[in-house]
Amino acid sequence: MAPSTRLIDSSYAAFINGKWHKSNRNIESRSPANLDDILGVFGEADKTLVAEAANAARNAFKSWSRTPAPVRAGIIQNFGRLVEANKEVLASIVTREIGKPLKEALGSVQEVIDTVNFFVSEGRRLYGQTVPSEMPNKELFTYRRPIGVFGCLTACNFPVAVPAWYFIPALVAGNTCVWKPSEDSLVTSFWFTELWAKAGLPSGVFNTVFGPGPTTGASFVELIENGAFDKIGFTGSTAVGRRIGEVCGRSLQTPCLELGGKNPMIVCPDADIDLAVNGAIFSGFGTAGQRCTSLGNLILHEKIYDQFVTKLVQKANAIKIGDPFDKDTTYGPLISKRFLDNHLDHLTTLIESHHELPLGKGGHIGHGVDWQHFTGNAKRGVYARPNIVLNVGMNDRIYSTETFGPLFNVLKYREFDEAMAMANNHGYGLSSSIYSNDPKTIYQFKQDITAGMSSINNTTTGAEAHLPFGGNGKSGNGGRQSGIWVIDQFTKWHAVNWDMSGRLQLAQMETAYVEPDLKFRIS
Picture 1 (cartoon, helix red, strand yellow):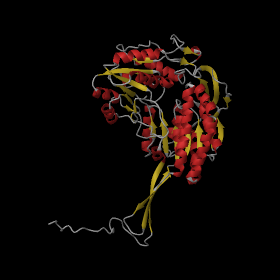
Picture 2: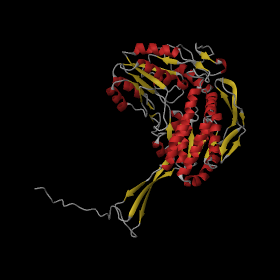
Picture 3: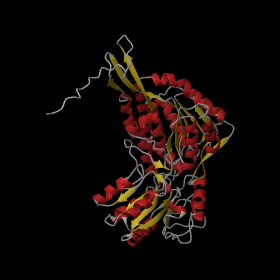
Picture 4: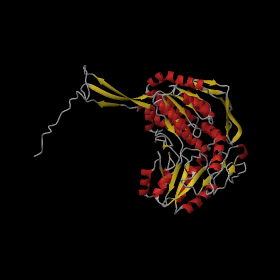
């Protein structure tokens, strides 16, 4: 059962310049495990509040960007210590608000701590270069400069880890921030914001606006063209990412877009079958399949197909669904009713007559569908049964549609080139996996896969704070989060030449290059 936490009945719509602002338009945060459980009531920020937040960030930028980077990093370290001190409570809020099993929620909070621990040192490593000049008495330098006001819209499936990936390096680099979290994780986002405030950030450096994507989010995007933001980050659907990319392009900005996936897992005939089955179960059903890196297409060699599917179905039938606070639960409810409705719609519109569903038909547990190993109250929550779809081909819509729920496809291949086509041809390019013990096969996979991330003998999911995270194609525009590489997202290079000669020196035109004697020949 979920531990009790106090109801936040605040009507808070925005945190701007160090203060909370209220709104008359309210949004309720309900637990997906029990829709009668209301965690909080918050306001909805309109365009005026979003603009006010961006203006506060703009006004705070000069002072924050001139704060020494090690001092900025010290405040980020304070934030990490506060998160660590509140790890269990924050994880339990995540579990209660979005239904993520407690073990996974604790892991996602740990990801915040890991990210802090990594980037604190970057405050002392925002290096530039001293570059030799081709002219005498002249020195050349490069510097990393913060970009400015960073606006960010994040999804609800990782309500603390993904925002941390964005904001920790952005703040260390000297940017100021405006955040619109998902309307499905407002209580978590409230406390995330409070932790930043208590860490010692100056007023206006970090600002938060609450509200749905079609209203508050739309206002956010409209303000890009008005010059309110200098950099945009977005984690969410490919369709919305395209819209944001178009707007940013007109403003000559390069956004950081982390979008959807249809992540492949190839299992070769020489693979450890039991290991691969376990990997497929977690890849497909961890967080109820609501990860951008969740398994989309399981691609099995024909020699092991029947054996693998038999073990896969047996393993899937044994998983425990229900109470996300139960330590043995594989996955809990879907994040909210709208995610359940989307999942049920996919079961209706994407399943074709030639497909087989070995785990059974139907999706909504407690509403005409049962699950043998279930804990909790299905009728009060938004629980979905797992689905595995067999006989899927590359021409089927379900092959190339991100379903974002406890559902994945199984395809069969004969030659490895065919498997690689199945892994790449859907157009997404986020995560990928292969199970094999043959170095030649693994090497070919690494060479030919179009995804931005790959695992060998491991799942399609999982990220570490010091490795770049991101995708290509329909999964993103090449931007990366995490690791030292993300600093390129939040800084711009500044080149400086300092001429101390006391006269006008013209590079290339007056450079004292020494010419060779081209008439010389070896005799």
